[in-house]
Image (cartoon, rainbow, N blue to C red; front, side, top):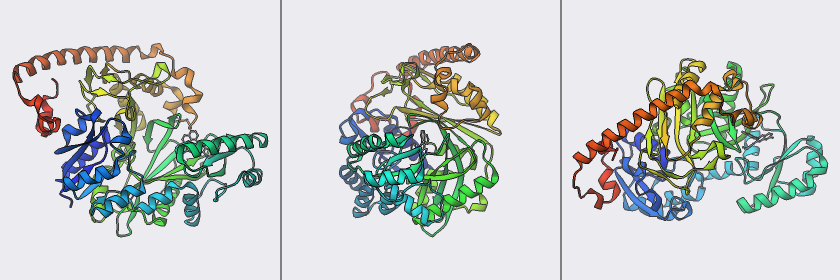
Length: 508
Ligand code: MV4
């Protein structure tokens, strides 16, 4: 097993990975930008190194500098988390050249799956159902021929795309030419590659993805599905596992398809195979994500498997500690992504200092957060500050617990998406489990209403806030007595706070 791992990330996922390292007896090394000197992940790490200025391009995306830090810190491996360098093949190669293990798949797999046309070709060959459409990039003329052949409506997509960028829905032939031009220039500007392909438009689709895990000895399993259809502008808001309207047969077929997909590319580590599922429960391969994902915790909740620890283990050369027949679903889990955004001002970013903060807890609740009371949320990085995960024996119980936990969660100083989540969790269509990727847009008016039904939850929130204020005053008083004149402020933040025992004195 590794002795020391560098976590090339920040925020809640960096904390999550550091926790996994500590459980495995691995020393964790953090990196931090100018904006993150006092960030939570720095305090959890055993060592921390400055990696540049606040903008990501000057810090968390500085691949060569990060590898240099890794060499200086004498780590065995780098965990990239998600975002930043996690899906950059050149970074995997850079790690390899430095003799450092990249915790994730080969760069070649990343490259193949990053190119959506190559991915479609490989999946088709592996017998995985893909959305009807082309498996080559197209000129405008070819696109017109194909669009007519496939039949409108069609989706024009960027080969280098993913996540909705450079994508256009085209309803009729007359609109195709303009759509191709706009998609091409958007793709060129975003990815430096204007290549396009075409798919048949799948109506009212649900986004259902399968978690896979593979070792370096040819063992590949799936850990069932997550439903991620509650999205806003291609940003996931709420995820749940297992999926709504799933059947044992469909689960088995999709699981087998995902394992076939992973095997076809010789996958190693944690990965996700994304599918669109139409109203007839037909499923189609969309993309494969070659990283640990934000929503991995709901799979951990229903399977009992620690995905982050497992991916570290297989990267260190261990065999998968479980087989497909050892895995089963138990209960239901829902995740709410807590964003530093104002849902009542069109989800505008809401940076600033967190003045008052108290996390929910209790039975069936997990909170993976990257912030604390007194921390400052900046504009430089992703606005997601925490993930709230509620688990129950049934979906109804998970919903009850999520509502209860949302009402306990106190965040003052910045606006968050908590009130929006409360509205989703009260929406009849959500409660019924009958929704698709159009849910937020379709119900945007109801979801912007601050309805009266919230009263009892509001009362609980006010009570929780009063308790948090009282606790803050008490802790501040105690802390002032305990920490009278101290020289700690002069030390590097990670020296002052790095020892995990000191987290107990977090309220200052
Ligand atoms: C589609 C589609 C319908 N038909 N492709 C959006 C993001 C990117 N990953 C793929 N996306 C879609 N591709 C075909 N052929 C509908 C979407 C889509 C979507 C997919 C998943 C989750 C949310 C979505 C919201 C709007 C559109």
